[in-house]
Image (tube, rainbow, N blue to C red; front, side):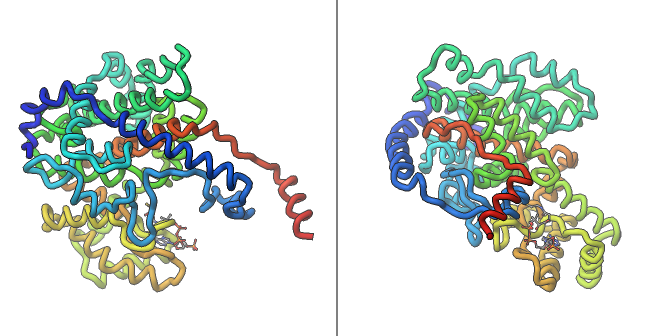
Length: 454
Ligand SMILES: CC(C)(COP(=O)(O)OP(=O)(O)OC[C@H]1O[C@@H](n2cnc3c(N)ncnc32)[C@H](O)[C@@H]1OP(=O)(O)O)[C@@H](O)C(=O)NCCC(=O)NCCS
């Protein structure tokens, strides 16, 4: 195995080795295309499920609108990425020696190809990312021109758009690319964009919160650790592993959540990966989506401040009941689909138990975990009283000194773009057409219901 800080020595050995993801995807596409074509031919007119009026008015909650084979939320086992649970992935994906958590390069291979990567596969992705990581000068100028009070998600979205001029898909489309080749150009764009994400995010972080200086990726480090390195945490090995963990567990969460759907909708117009991922990031920026993790760490710090330290169990119970009586939710608890403790919470809790058991805010997370589910169950209305990923996310970043809460959604976005792009490549591969659902006026909806319920 390779030591994390020796990756450079071996990089040249991989430099000439082109990634094989295109070959592996190409080998699978004929089977998938045939399978989907047969499904449509045989069952194209079959109704899958009925859609109620409440669903039409209620944000299409629970309506199946998209197929995604990248990930699936299993209510009892948590998110499955290409069929594997988080626990399984942390165990079986390739790791560099001296590190606890797998490299994101292996995860990206898995999401894209649908097959477990070998160590070499993961290294080739990491190497490809490193080779393509440099940012064009106009990007730096763009970020530096923006006022310091700009939200980091705006800068993140702008930076992605500013790279669009290099889109392989757009260039080849103008040149008359055959539609069978769309997915390959999308894969190229996906690798080019994901390669630059740690550098983009670090540039934004340094512009907003540090001295604004630019740091280049360290060839000794993998993609995740390089983000840490570029925000001044190059020597903090524990934080490197936390970045690996964070970027793996947030990478995908089914294909129809707001941000993934936004990305895929835009992509379906044959807009390229840059337009699509920027749209996805814009959706992630909403308080009902990616911003939720901020709410949780803010609440934990409020509790800690309120009691001037850790509360007793009784004090915490009283505080939680009061929060609920005031008509507020307990951030980080509950889930629309999961019916058990979120495995992404568990993975981060295991990390914290090992590395920061004495951190006061983590101790509070533990107390809340002990107290809140029982209280939430008392009401009888909550479907899942267990913690979700946000119940602990911010606590870990806070411990390692990343305390700019607005930035947490950018961290989420770095990871989630791996999921977006894997979905985009496959949408192109199976020839997904432009999305065009239908809207209806209220009066036509009323007339239709009256005519069918008479
Ligand atoms: C995640 C969430 C939006 C899911 O919503 P949902 O699918 O409607 O959840 P449920 O069906 O279980 O909700 C049933 C009831 O329990 C309440 N409930 C759900 N989670 C709750 C929580 N964490 N604290 C208090 N009450 C909660 C709901 O408000 C709802 O009450 P109502 O009938 O009076 O409106 C919700 O659990 C929530 O707001 N959690 C806190 C915020 C959070 O952690 N967000 C990040 C999600 S990853």
